[in-house]
Image (cartoon, rainbow, N blue to C red; front, side, top):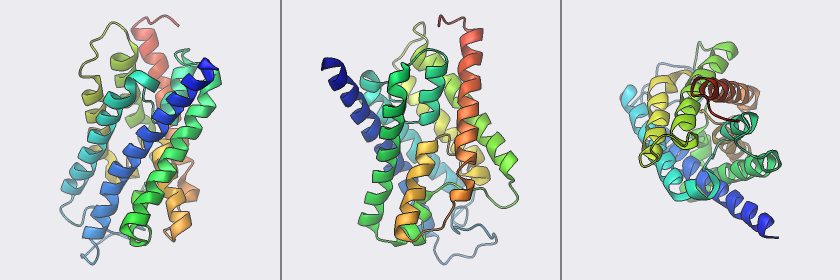
Length: 252
């Protein structure tokens, strides 16, 4: 019974942490879309808005929101669940024997539920325009970006994120006091740099929640692109976990 209760608490932490990530991070993207509504836009991207208010400045704002959300979640829940808040991270840690297999599915379900609840609540508070205009802050391939380019970009940025997680959160030899801040900053930097390529998801759950929100509340149907945000992050996270384990000579 104690083991089940412990897993329940860890899953609750993952649910709330992912909720925080999507509500604040994707919510910042929604607000960017809404602020830009009616602005002159030169792209045929399905959700017009990001970039119209100042180009990289929009992505700086969104990246900062995500960085704060990730850092806060890690400091709140890191000691309870490890604060994966990302199915790709959970899968990669399991692959290098840093996470028990029996907890993988419960963690991923909790992450997906947390992301979905965040998108739904944001629409309930802001109104359906959060979906119809703001696309629930969903990630999507920008004009001129192919599936292969999108998968590669998501793999590269998630590789950097997972390397940071392995070094600062997993490796027992490194100091931990700034781990949450640095991991959050890596997410923010990836969004600022590559947001205009794929939306810079890093995270299947971060994309899943807004996609469900769009489906429920009349936003665009982007499900055909969802494999990009599964394959890219999972591949990048797996490679990083094995590379760091090898280079740092971590025991498995």
